[in-house]
Length: 352
Ligand SMILES: Nc1nc2c(ncn2[C@@H]2O[C@H](COP(=O)(O)OP(=O)(O)OP(=O)(O)O)[C@@H](O)[C@H]2O)c(=O)[nH]1
Ligand SMILES: [Mg+2]
Image (tube, rainbow, N blue to C red; front, top):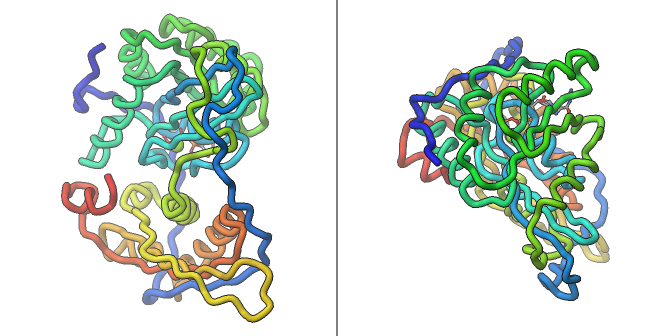
């Protein structure tokens, strides 16, 4: 299989909405508290223990242009939020693994960054990540959103998929967003685009056909013992999950260029001392850096009097507390790391 150089890539149609940005005054720290529920730390089960000989398991790459609904579909299949999503393209920045646990199968989904024409070194690295994932999976889900016409970006990906041996299921995502008539036309266009093993329309948001898609995938997996513990949903680290939930909250409502310039890194997590008699987990102080590329972007993220950053903190905290099952106190620090997307050293520092 030949994969294109990054320059050969075509842009697909991606909708981006404008927004109004706030004014700004100075940096702020955010600290919010809330109720908590008890933590349920999971013990990893023994991989492969007691599985039956008809058990099927394998890896599945989820690919497509940016913003077509790959991460939303991953979450719907897993049944739990493990990948962040947003209405901005190029949200996912690393291959996120999610595990679908069936009675007699295990699907390891690999949600990939949207394949796109790269404008920066970061973009090139994201595309490389997709290419690497494709070369080592048992099946591929190729996502094409029903609310957009099949375009040159899809055609480009379709051509690259042609040499791949693994079965490819073309998924018409966002079926809830269009009429039956439009969906039929979309399915025909997908059919014309390549030679797919299956074509299936789904709505990850409404849950339509998600179970059917699981069944289709399970049948195509090789006979194999489970690859991951039977109670695992993702292998994302705790710090990555926290950083991603903060990035997701920060992406909401910001203008087109800023999401790409934003990187989030957890610096330190400190557990507070329990009070005497406290029978629930101690609160965590989480120190987080939000990196942007220019001071003007710092101003936007922070908002007037710190108002926007405060909102980001509040939104993120809810998701983080749900994920950790305990109270957290977020300390968000916004910093400028000039042109980090183009700088190999800084990309390395940020984990790309
Ligand atoms: N109506 C509708 N919208 C959806 C559906 N699935 C995803 N979306 C929306 O599409 C947008 C993009 O979703 P993501 O899951 O982040 O898309 P992605 O392909 O992972 O995007 P990148 O990570 O940027 O490549 C979000 O605003 C989602 O809410 C769906 O089934 N129906
Ligand atoms: Mg994504």
